[in-house]
Image 1 (spheres, one colour):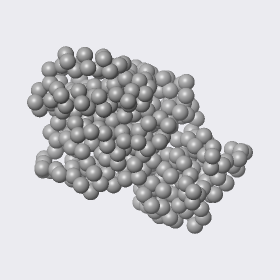
Image 2 (cartoon, one colour; image 1 turned 45 degrees about the vertical axis):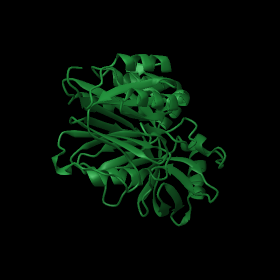
Image 3 (tube, one colour; image 1 turned 180 degrees about the horizontal axis):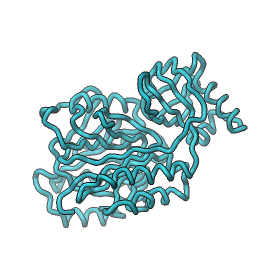
Length: 360
């Protein structure tokens, strides 16, 4: 349910019947973030358990909103805040068939990978994962994950719910140049490509391909159109990585990890390939849709920036293939499972999940 204002949110909460076993997932749009402390106080006064994140925009049907809230009632098998390498998990992971893990994570945290690794190490590959990185449109790192205990930074929140979610992942980016070797990286920082400073190599590639001059100051203006494609040894799949800035050491800072010794490509896309990907992801899910479901969408913030006025067309492509209104957010890093159960962090991608629900 989308609520446009704090008053609408509190009125809606007052109308809900919330069982002791239920919680609320509350997604907040960037321009409504100032209300989060009041929301935390209000929910605590009412004795309502909840969790959520602040996102650049909320996605509802075929529209995006930079103000307001999405409220989704869930009945968790387990839910908890997760810190790097610190997570108490009392359930037997082997018994978690037909279960979905919803992950909300600090999208600009340098610990993004450690956080998802911590959750995956405890929960395992019997569940399916869906989620997205929270954070603000200006890409300044601030606390963005919250629950009854407050507003947090460098954390992940996990909620396990019953139901075998139908997942689709697409991105629409194509190889432009490469492969190159990642000769030095640490976490989400790409230091060297083929033994040379990462920014200098990337700069040369972009300048030659696009006939322009690339500087550190205007880096993101061009980098959002030319992400990296990471290919691990022994894998065919390309995982997209979003370069967002250059640090003082001419290293490229990305959303999520860049594994050392992996091969990387510089990718390029256009509006048509990205819009086609949104159609593909919806078609993939719709073919195997549950009878009744909640459509959850995590769509990358830089796709919205790239598509600009045509981003609503991407949402419309997805919505018209679904039987129920989609709800979700513009994310900084997207999370989904592979078919073998592996948890993968994606960038610049569209992730759609159809979560079975009763009596929708």
